[in-house]
Every structure is written in C-alpha cells, then in structure tokens.
Image (cartoon, rainbow, N blue to C red):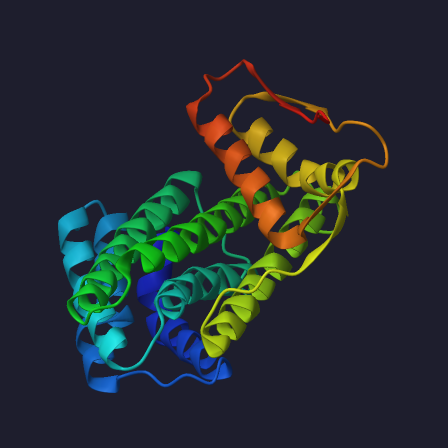
Length: 280
C-alpha cells in the first residue's frame, strides 16, 4: 500500500495515538485550534503530498505556524511543540509495523520532508511569539536548534533501519533491529529529558567520565547503517583504549552523531567518511 493511502485509511487511529502520546506526557492540547490547524490538517496535507498533488512547503509551514502559535498560547514549551510532530512520525511508523505495511523509500523521504517543513513553521512562529513577549530568543533558538538536530538524527536513523527491515532481507532480531530498538529508546530518553528540563526551567548537564572508544563503538552500528544506505564507506579510529573525557554522555553522543550525519550528507557516494579520535 502506498503511504498516502495508508495514512488516509488510518487517519483516525494515527490521531488517537498522537493524542495518547501527548496525554502520556501530562500535557493538554488547545483543542479548538488543534482540530482546526494542527495534526489533522497536517495529515491531510501529507496525503496530498504523497499523492503527488503536492502540498507546497509554504502551505505546510503556514498551517504549522498557526498550530505552533496555538500551542504557545496553550502553555507548551518549544520542545513539546517539536514532540507533537515527532509523535506523528512515530504513530505512522508503529502502525505500519503492526499492520505489516511495507513503505517505499521515496514515501519515507516525502514524510520526512513534510515533517521538516511543519516543524520549521511551528518552531519559527513559536519563537516569534516568544520574542514578541520579550523572551530571550537567542537562548530559545540555541536550545531549539540542538533539540531539532537530536530529533532529526534519531528519526533519520530509525527511518533507515525501518527501510532495511522492510525489504525482508534482514531479521528484526539482527543488528539492524538492534539499531532501531536503541534509536527508539534514545528518542524516549530525549523526550523525558526535555520534559524534565522544561519543568526545571533550565537545561541540566550530568557530567560523568565517558570512555571515548566505548562511545564510538556504541554509535558505530547506526553510523555504518546510514553510511551503507548512502553508498559510503565508514572508517572508525576510536583512539587509545581507556581514553576518557568528562561530559554529559547523551549530549556528547548527539554532537558526534550530528557531525557524522553532516559528513554523510555532504560526501559524494562511493567515497569514504573517516571518524578519528586523538588526544591532546
């Protein structure tokens, strides 16, 4: 089944799952605005885009901007606004798994593009509203940018793993399934950490000794999967055994993953990306 037909056929179930995920985070949606400009309208535009009667990026961003403004007025933080659209991606992906629906790579790319446009529109309006109210927009932009990078990287890795699994050539219990499981767990931890930060009113870092070689080894399966998907070779030089730094492990991992994602994105196919660790 084409993803557009799948979303159209299961729209009510996707909306229900999105609301359940929001309620599980002890949040309440501004119902009237959400119904008019929020996730339901985004799903309609997604179906149009997938059906090649393409909803323009401007249309999606404009709708999401209205949604972002409504969520801002309803007391949401910017990270929670981003999570609303992350919930849409997860709801669609979970339901596709459960119904054994195979989705094409092109349809997943369209889904990611539409989510990018929606998140950008919603966050832009949210920050504009915050600025109008005298918020420190520079600090908001910095936190938003980092959070968006983390979510984007994790969603991208999960999508690639799902595409590989959907071919039927590898088993769910293999290394690709493990990559998907760890990625979803990281998304869950990111959501929990963002909520905790919002409650505290500030970002908190937990610095611990991080053995760099172990961190590189932990990140390597997902990185190799992404490199292979893009037709690239990946070479890792993890540095001296036992070499450690004092850092927040999750933040450091997100930074390394972001660097690798950028390298994969801007490196030509049939070439090599190298990650090297040196001590000074």
